[in-house]
Amino acid sequence: MTTTVRLASCDLPTAYGQFQLHAFGPETGREEVLAAVHRPQPAGQQNPLVRIHSACATGDLLGSLKCDCGPQLATSLRMIGASDYGILLYMLCHEGRGIGLAAKIRAYTFMDQGYDTVAANAAVGAPTDARDYRPAASVLAWLGVTSARLATNNPHKIDALRTAGITVDRVPLSGFVTSDNRDYLGQKDTLLGHLNSSGAAAVS
Ligand SMILES: Nc1nc2c(ncn2[C@@H]2O[C@H](COP(=O)(O)OP(=O)(O)OP(=O)(O)O)[C@@H](O)[C@H]2O)c(=O)[nH]1
Ligand SMILES: [Zn+2]
Image 1: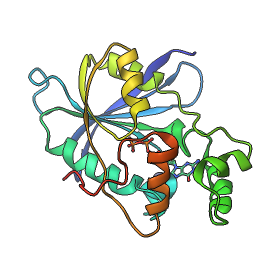
Image 2: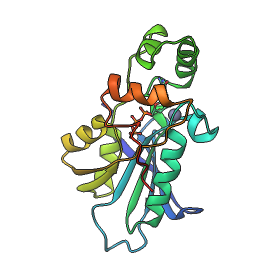
Image 3: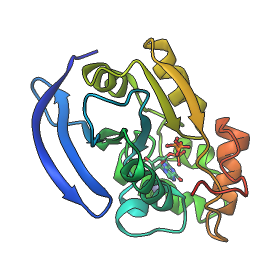
Image 4: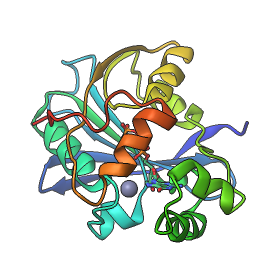
């Protein structure tokens, strides 16, 4: 595995609050993780609210109703912006559960024919999930995070941080169900082992 290093930083005022941005990636190559840190009193709070968000151009940018990424991202940013210490890790390298945008779009055409999300990935020759969370753990280590409240329904993210020595409490981030994403959210629970992605109660 290549080492994840900080490539650039700046301050950024946003609709959700003031953030410090850091781009991380391998020493030679493209950036992989955008870290947005909201910490109004830098010396004070520990145990940040953390969201590790896998890039989803269709959901995050276009408002796709086929998944829950868009509302999960907006809700996370609202929660982080309202917190005393919060961190969004936007995983640029995790589009399509790590298989990339083109492969995800190809998989969507199979899902439109009735394939579930696992079978659709297989139909395009892609693994079910190709995400590596070690860069996210490296970024949190760089930020000095030793314990976190992680907003997720995905147990693999929790396991990855714990393996890296970070203490994790889970904050559920579910309930963003639409008629278009209902089947997919159910498949996340039954096929991918997620913790009630399709649950009724949304985090506010
Ligand atoms: N291959 C594939 N990727 C998808 C599909 N729908 C969403 N994605 C991608 O899945 C990633 C988000 O994963 P999810 O399983 O929705 O959620 P998660 O990030 O694992 O878990 P949470 O932390 O609970 O949100 C993003 O990179 C999306 O682009 C799909 O049908 N096929
Ligand atoms: Zn999505």
